[in-house]
Image (cartoon, rainbow, N blue to C red; front, side, top):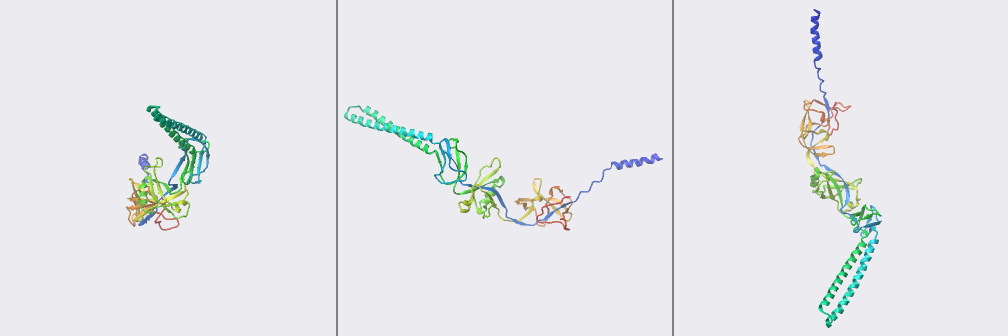
Length: 379
């Protein structure tokens, strides 16, 4: 009798041990929200830039030789005709002397041939020689004249070659680089000095692939492109778009853009190589919504936000159209209406229909609903 009553109790114990425990309730997360309101935007695009001369030349000797002197350093201002560097002129002078000697010899031969032709012409007139002999003398005279012309041209070339041993500045400018030092043997045309021409200056900056069209459209409107020197309180200098690279840089995949600073006093006050900021201002747009970047998430390849239903305190996903960003805020041009409540942080830990509660600031008894929230507590 005792065994019979023990068996049902043992079965109940086994069933109780095999049953699954009750799941823990889903925690109600605290979120920070903001109420949608319309605003206006007049964004700017800023790019780090460098001031460069409109024209920068790499100067080199027109003849080869050994450099014996460099007369300028980086940063020196030079004038037209100023000596920049000097080659060893010894071999060039010897070539010039040889050309002059050949010219003297050709001159003497021409003088002798002309005198002979005059005598033979007189003999021909007196009938002592034939016409054929006079024609041979005439041919010899023409050859002597040609040899003289050749020697004179060669002498001029060697004179120029000797002058090319001195590298001089063609225009006024500033030395921006030195690529050869005394003692080096350089070939004709090898760069020795980099010279930035004194005159109009450009500001050069790189633009991402997706911003090239924006920069072009903004630059087409006068006054939208300005340059602000780094570390200076001077007013921005207006600039004009001059050139956009036809192809992207193979490493950075950005496009090089050059803007003309003009020839004003403010532009001339900028030092070559100085860092500056190019500011491209966009037109003011009304009726947009600004949200913290933390409020956005990607849902099936589209930008979306979490909307809070104040009655049920649940969230649902909502697709929006984003036009760009201003600092830490996203500019939303579609999908939201004034009065909607948007979750602004912790959006990646929520699920559709999830019940939430509004985050309460420490020391405050009311939920935190702000225009620009920056944090969320999700516990």
